Length: 111
Image (tube, rainbow, N blue to C red):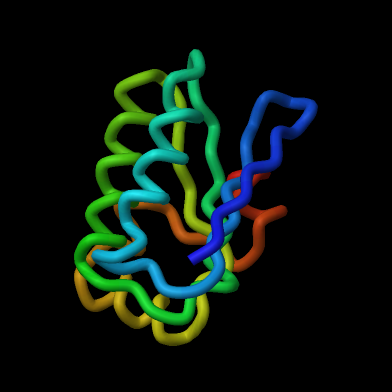
């Protein structure tokens, strides 16, 4: 798995994930989210367009990140999941809870 972070001029952050988000790579995502969640009122978009697989470890990292962002007065939104991941998020009931958007731009705008 590869994770990259882009800071935007409006203080939002886009975290892009590529590859498999699973027990072997979940720590990388958790560590990255920990770094950006420490900011005041974190506003984070997680770009999932390059995620090929996600297991419960990956889902847990996203849920914990979302909860921490909200507790800090901000938000964590998911963007552009592929068909597999969209179905997984729907099946486990996270689509409406976490906020899933079709594109990174939509997620940044909250539309």
